[in-house]
Length: 229
Image (tube, rainbow, N blue to C red):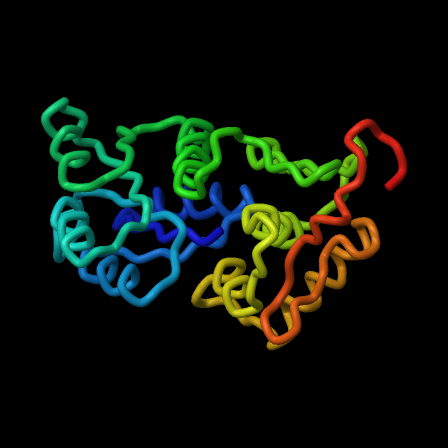
Protein backbone atom coordinates (compact mmCIF):
# COMPACT_ATOMS: atom_id res chain seq x y z
CA UNK A 1 0.00 0.00 0.00
CA UNK A 2 1.29 3.45 -0.94
CA UNK A 3 0.99 6.39 1.45
CA UNK A 4 1.68 10.08 0.86
CA UNK A 5 3.05 11.85 3.93
CA UNK A 6 2.70 15.63 3.99
CA UNK A 7 4.70 17.09 6.89
CA UNK A 8 7.04 20.10 7.03
CA UNK A 9 8.78 19.13 10.28
CA UNK A 10 11.83 17.10 9.27
CA UNK A 11 12.27 15.28 12.57
CA UNK A 12 8.62 14.32 12.93
CA UNK A 13 8.30 13.47 9.24
CA UNK A 14 11.29 11.15 9.37
CA UNK A 15 9.84 9.41 12.41
CA UNK A 16 6.44 8.91 10.75
CA UNK A 17 7.99 7.70 7.50
CA UNK A 18 10.13 5.16 9.38
CA UNK A 19 7.11 3.99 11.39
CA UNK A 20 5.01 3.45 8.26
CA UNK A 21 7.78 1.73 6.33
CA UNK A 22 8.36 -0.68 9.19
CA UNK A 23 4.66 -1.53 8.90
CA UNK A 24 5.30 -2.58 5.26
CA UNK A 25 3.86 0.54 3.61
CA UNK A 26 5.52 2.39 0.75
CA UNK A 27 5.85 6.07 1.73
CA UNK A 28 6.46 9.21 -0.32
CA UNK A 29 7.04 12.45 1.59
CA UNK A 30 6.43 16.06 0.59
CA UNK A 31 6.92 19.11 2.79
CA UNK A 32 4.39 21.72 1.63
CA UNK A 33 0.86 22.25 0.42
CA UNK A 34 1.53 22.81 -3.29
CA UNK A 35 3.72 19.71 -3.35
CA UNK A 36 0.89 17.74 -1.77
CA UNK A 37 -1.60 18.81 -4.43
CA UNK A 38 0.81 17.89 -7.22
CA UNK A 39 1.58 14.51 -5.67
CA UNK A 40 -2.10 13.66 -5.17
CA UNK A 41 -2.89 14.70 -8.73
CA UNK A 42 -0.06 12.72 -10.30
CA UNK A 43 0.35 9.82 -7.88
CA UNK A 44 -1.50 6.61 -7.15
CA UNK A 45 -1.86 6.73 -3.37
CA UNK A 46 -4.00 4.59 -1.09
CA UNK A 47 -3.90 7.13 1.76
CA UNK A 48 -2.69 10.64 2.59
CA UNK A 49 -1.34 11.52 6.05
CA UNK A 50 -1.57 15.31 6.18
CA UNK A 51 -0.35 18.01 8.56
CA UNK A 52 -2.44 21.19 8.61
CA UNK A 53 0.21 23.83 9.32
CA UNK A 54 2.00 23.67 5.98
CA UNK A 55 4.01 26.29 4.08
CA UNK A 56 2.70 27.49 0.75
CA UNK A 57 -0.83 26.22 1.24
CA UNK A 58 -2.64 25.33 4.45
CA UNK A 59 -3.71 21.72 4.97
CA UNK A 60 -7.39 22.72 5.03
CA UNK A 61 -6.98 24.29 1.61
CA UNK A 62 -5.22 21.16 0.36
CA UNK A 63 -8.14 19.00 1.46
CA UNK A 64 -10.73 21.37 0.00
CA UNK A 65 -8.97 21.59 -3.38
CA UNK A 66 -8.47 17.82 -3.51
CA UNK A 67 -12.16 17.17 -2.94
CA UNK A 68 -13.18 19.95 -5.36
CA UNK A 69 -11.07 18.21 -8.02
CA UNK A 70 -12.75 14.88 -7.34
CA UNK A 71 -9.87 13.15 -5.55
CA UNK A 72 -11.37 10.51 -3.26
CA UNK A 73 -8.17 9.24 -1.62
CA UNK A 74 -8.64 8.82 2.16
CA UNK A 75 -7.04 11.64 4.17
CA UNK A 76 -5.86 11.33 7.77
CA UNK A 77 -5.10 14.70 9.36
CA UNK A 78 -2.33 15.03 11.93
CA UNK A 79 -2.41 18.37 13.68
CA UNK A 80 -1.58 20.19 16.91
CA UNK A 81 -4.85 22.12 16.43
CA UNK A 82 -7.01 20.17 18.84
CA UNK A 83 -9.98 22.47 19.42
CA UNK A 84 -13.30 20.82 18.57
CA UNK A 85 -13.91 23.52 15.98
CA UNK A 86 -10.60 22.71 14.24
CA UNK A 87 -11.48 19.03 14.12
CA UNK A 88 -14.94 19.80 12.82
CA UNK A 89 -13.55 22.04 10.08
CA UNK A 90 -11.06 19.39 8.95
CA UNK A 91 -13.71 16.70 8.78
CA UNK A 92 -16.30 18.96 7.16
CA UNK A 93 -14.03 19.96 4.26
CA UNK A 94 -13.33 16.32 3.45
CA UNK A 95 -10.82 14.70 5.81
CA UNK A 96 -11.67 11.12 6.77
CA UNK A 97 -10.05 11.12 10.20
CA UNK A 98 -8.28 13.55 12.54
CA UNK A 99 -5.52 12.73 15.04
CA UNK A 100 -4.06 15.34 17.38
CA UNK A 101 -0.35 15.85 18.01
CA UNK A 102 1.41 14.46 19.93
CA UNK A 103 0.05 11.01 19.15
CA UNK A 104 0.79 7.43 20.07
CA UNK A 105 2.50 5.59 17.18
CA UNK A 106 0.31 2.53 17.67
CA UNK A 107 -2.82 4.65 17.42
CA UNK A 108 -1.56 6.23 14.20
CA UNK A 109 -0.97 2.79 12.68
CA UNK A 110 -4.39 1.59 13.86
CA UNK A 111 -6.10 4.57 12.24
CA UNK A 112 -4.15 4.03 9.02
CA UNK A 113 -5.27 0.39 8.94
CA UNK A 114 -8.87 1.37 9.67
CA UNK A 115 -8.98 3.90 6.84
CA UNK A 116 -7.40 1.49 4.36
CA UNK A 117 -9.78 -1.23 5.45
CA UNK A 118 -12.76 1.07 5.05
CA UNK A 119 -11.66 2.28 1.62
CA UNK A 120 -11.32 -1.30 0.39
CA UNK A 121 -14.79 -2.20 1.69
CA UNK A 122 -13.65 -4.66 4.35
CA UNK A 123 -15.36 -4.89 7.73
CA UNK A 124 -12.89 -7.23 9.41
CA UNK A 125 -9.19 -6.57 10.12
CA UNK A 126 -7.90 -9.95 8.89
CA UNK A 127 -7.43 -10.85 5.23
CA UNK A 128 -8.41 -14.46 4.55
CA UNK A 129 -8.08 -16.65 1.47
CA UNK A 130 -9.12 -20.12 2.55
CA UNK A 131 -6.35 -21.36 4.84
CA UNK A 132 -4.19 -18.32 4.08
CA UNK A 133 -4.52 -15.55 6.68
CA UNK A 134 -2.82 -12.16 6.84
CA UNK A 135 -2.94 -9.85 9.86
CA UNK A 136 -1.96 -6.27 8.90
CA UNK A 137 -1.76 -5.18 12.55
CA UNK A 138 0.61 -7.96 13.62
CA UNK A 139 2.51 -7.90 10.30
CA UNK A 140 2.08 -11.66 10.15
CA UNK A 141 0.78 -14.21 7.67
CA UNK A 142 0.08 -17.91 8.04
CA UNK A 143 -0.88 -20.92 5.92
CA UNK A 144 -3.06 -23.52 7.66
CA UNK A 145 -2.01 -22.05 10.99
CA UNK A 146 1.72 -22.16 10.26
CA UNK A 147 3.54 -18.83 10.22
CA UNK A 148 5.06 -17.69 6.94
CA UNK A 149 8.52 -16.13 7.02
CA UNK A 150 8.10 -13.14 4.69
CA UNK A 151 10.25 -10.13 3.94
CA UNK A 152 8.66 -6.69 4.21
CA UNK A 153 8.11 -6.48 0.44
CA UNK A 154 6.79 -10.04 0.22
CA UNK A 155 4.32 -9.25 2.99
CA UNK A 156 3.25 -6.05 1.22
CA UNK A 157 2.80 -7.87 -2.10
CA UNK A 158 0.77 -10.65 -0.49
CA UNK A 159 -1.42 -8.00 1.15
CA UNK A 160 -2.04 -6.39 -2.25
CA UNK A 161 -2.93 -9.73 -3.81
CA UNK A 162 -5.33 -10.63 -1.00
CA UNK A 163 -6.99 -7.22 -1.07
CA UNK A 164 -7.58 -7.65 -4.81
CA UNK A 165 -10.09 -10.45 -4.00
CA UNK A 166 -9.08 -12.59 -6.95
CA UNK A 167 -8.92 -9.71 -9.43
CA UNK A 168 -5.66 -9.48 -11.38
CA UNK A 169 -3.03 -7.15 -9.94
CA UNK A 170 -1.01 -5.56 -12.71
CA UNK A 171 2.77 -5.40 -12.48
CA UNK A 172 2.62 -1.62 -12.91
CA UNK A 173 0.13 -1.16 -10.07
CA UNK A 174 2.11 -3.48 -7.81
CA UNK A 175 5.34 -1.63 -8.50
CA UNK A 176 3.76 1.78 -7.90
CA UNK A 177 2.37 0.64 -4.55
CA UNK A 178 5.44 -1.26 -3.37
CA UNK A 179 8.05 1.38 -4.12
CA UNK A 180 8.40 5.11 -3.49
CA UNK A 181 9.61 7.84 -5.85
CA UNK A 182 13.27 7.79 -4.84
CA UNK A 183 13.82 4.04 -4.75
CA UNK A 184 15.79 2.28 -7.45
CA UNK A 185 13.55 -0.39 -8.93
CA UNK A 186 14.66 -3.08 -11.35
CA UNK A 187 12.32 -3.72 -14.27
CA UNK A 188 11.64 -7.26 -13.03
CA UNK A 189 11.36 -6.38 -9.33
CA UNK A 190 7.72 -7.42 -8.99
CA UNK A 191 8.36 -10.70 -10.83
CA UNK A 192 11.24 -11.46 -8.45
CA UNK A 193 9.04 -10.83 -5.41
CA UNK A 194 6.33 -13.06 -6.88
CA UNK A 195 8.89 -15.81 -7.49
CA UNK A 196 10.09 -15.64 -3.89
CA UNK A 197 6.54 -15.54 -2.56
CA UNK A 198 5.53 -18.56 -4.64
CA UNK A 199 8.27 -20.58 -2.96
CA UNK A 200 6.60 -19.97 0.41
CA UNK A 201 3.00 -20.64 -0.65
CA UNK A 202 1.24 -23.74 -2.04
CA UNK A 203 1.93 -24.48 -5.68
CA UNK A 204 -0.43 -22.66 -8.00
CA UNK A 205 -1.81 -20.22 -5.40
CA UNK A 206 -0.42 -17.21 -7.29
CA UNK A 207 -1.40 -17.53 -10.92
CA UNK A 208 -0.07 -15.49 -13.81
CA UNK A 209 -2.67 -13.59 -15.81
CA UNK A 210 -1.06 -13.32 -19.21
CA UNK A 211 -0.53 -9.73 -20.34
CA UNK A 212 -1.84 -8.34 -17.03
CA UNK A 213 -0.08 -9.50 -13.90
CA UNK A 214 -0.91 -11.83 -11.04
CA UNK A 215 -3.86 -12.99 -8.96
CA UNK A 216 -4.62 -15.46 -6.18
CA UNK A 217 -6.25 -18.59 -7.55
CA UNK A 218 -9.61 -19.22 -5.81
CA UNK A 219 -9.20 -22.94 -6.48
CA UNK A 220 -6.01 -23.09 -4.40
CA UNK A 221 -7.20 -21.98 -1.00
CA UNK A 222 -6.68 -25.03 1.17
CA UNK A 223 -8.65 -26.12 4.20
CA UNK A 224 -8.80 -23.98 7.30
CA UNK A 225 -8.78 -26.95 9.64
CA UNK A 226 -5.06 -27.61 9.21
CA UNK A 227 -5.38 -30.45 6.70
CA UNK A 228 -2.99 -30.58 3.77
CA UNK A 229 -4.17 -28.79 0.62
